[in-house]
Structures are given as structure tokens and as C-alpha cells.
Length: 230
Image 1: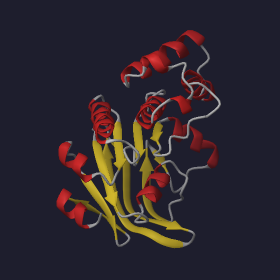
Image 2: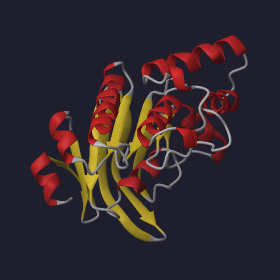
Image 3: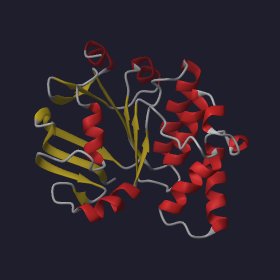
Image 4: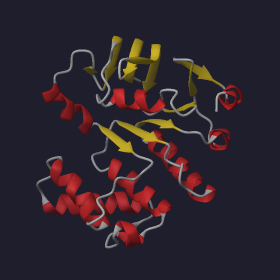
């Protein structure tokens, strides 16, 4: 399998302050990895660097074949088309239905054929168990339902890489379990998945390689060591 993410000796800054340094991080296609660590330890900064929102201050960094140390701004949209992102705060357009939220993404990313757009929306809603909610407005959905729509949105363009930033942070335990199970299923289908989470019980329930951000470093971790840095 090829590496979807390949970081070597990477340094990341936030407002000129070193957040992470000497980061070695590889993620293969079809694999799922967890990122843990305290608030402010660098998890979100690392995720933002992967989709070229946070620049690489030093080291070598490659994502989906793009060299992030030399990538030109005009190529960033092409990089991001290969990446699905699941945000904790959902970021759904509040004045549009579920269907129109998904349609907006497809139109923005170049889907021209109406029948293909409708078919793809139906597919992703079915995959997250929300086929009967397409007409709903975001405020009419529970937090768990909104997160499933966000996951469907992230999968619209069949990304090679999915980034999930605290995807279970605002969810009840049952819904959180459903989301993590679905992320593992997505990885099993060939998409690389990186999950930043504080939910160590879910890591125990659905184990996968785990890395902890602590003391400006990213290190492989067991659930036990991750618990110490929670």
C-alpha cells in the first residue's frame, strides 16, 4: 500500500510559536489512525497542515502526492478535493436543507450531470442511515443526525483521505459508537482515515494505531499512555 500522508521531521507553528516539531507521521491508504492529546497540544494544527491551511515550517511533508513544502496556492483546491473533512461543529449551511447542503458541495466541486448528483447524494445518505432526512433543515436534526450528514458530505467526492476532528465530541455514547464504527468501515473500503479524539473508551472498543500529541511531539501511543496525556 502507498502512503497517503508522509511526514518526516516536520515542524508546525501557530502564530510563530512551535506547536509540534520533529514530526514523523505516515498513514497508508485504507488504514485508520487516532490522534490524542490535551486541548492545545497540536492535534488540530496537525490536521490543518494536512489540508494546507497551516504551513509546514520545516521538514518534509507529502499528502496525496503533493509536496506541502512547495505547493502553490492554485493547486491547494486540487489537494483538498481528495480530502474529506468532518468537523466537530458541523458547519452545515443553516438556510439550506440536507439535500441542498450536499448539492452545494457537488456543484462547487464540478459535478455537472444532475442525475449523477442525485444518485451520489442518495448513496451517501443511505450509507449513513439518513435517506429519509434529505428534506430536513439542519436545525430540525439532532446533533447525532447532523454529524452523520457531515460524514455523508465528507464522502461525496469519494476522497482518498478523511480527516475527522473530534467527530464524537458532542454526541451521546450510542451515536458516537455508530460514527466511529462507520469511520472504520470507510477505512476498510480503502479510504485513509485520521481521527482526532479524546474518547479513549472508543479507541479501546475500536482499536487502531494511536498517536499522542504532548510536549510539542507526536509519538506512537497505547491507550494507557494516551490516557496519561488526556
